Image (cartoon, rainbow, N blue to C red; front, side, top):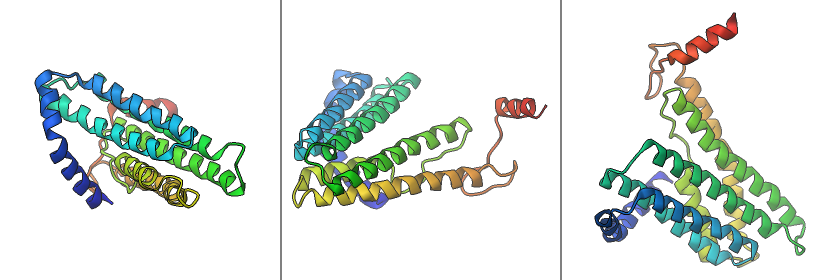
Length: 230
């Protein structure tokens, strides 16, 4: 999956470089791009609700391209900031939740059959796993640990849902999209487990190198633990 992602990202960057160059020259603020990407991705939730699945898929992929723009433009213009990183990450989480809510609405209408009821739970599992992937990374990084490991990261999720919706729509009762959602329901939660194990392995006693990191307990955490022990 990572190789496919890297190949697609390389090809996409080559295609959109002229647009990025223009944005850099025009000094477009990266937070503006983050906001536009957020609004575009969120709109896909409405189109899932309206059973316009192909349109929803196109908007998810377009929003993903904007997600690529903002980081690159931020670095090249020197406008990167801690708030910008926080803002972009927060909007990413919100937009992904809205996409899943749109998918829930797709399967939860008056035409729903038994299979659609099952899909509601599948979408909820995929949404929970996706949110927890981000949460585990944030908590690990708060401890000073790089935690980008795992099979199903955000870019993979965007590509799978967007491509399945755009290219296959509701053909065959939306079979391809259903399969993708089942895959996400399983692999997102497996990714959470991978990250839990990664953090465990890298929070062994100080000075014991495991994997790529040696954990040093932050002083604030040490004081907190000592206080709780008292």
